[in-house]
Image (cartoon, rainbow, N blue to C red; front, side, top):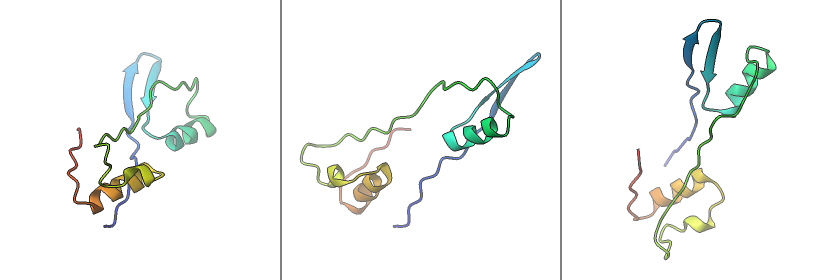
Length: 86
């Protein structure tokens, strides 16, 4: 399996007279805006968590992995059933 997990920045602008708000999906994208002075008054408003839930027997050996990508690769490589949300 050739898996790649990237976040694609999504910019949402809501125009309010003399104000606009930009929400980005990746900290790296946010950092670019702050570093080049495009973004001012930077505030963290949300974050994402990845939660994997499975049987205690851990048939995919997910507990032995260190990253979300490795865990998902382990599930894919195993005969385990994966039911993603969303």
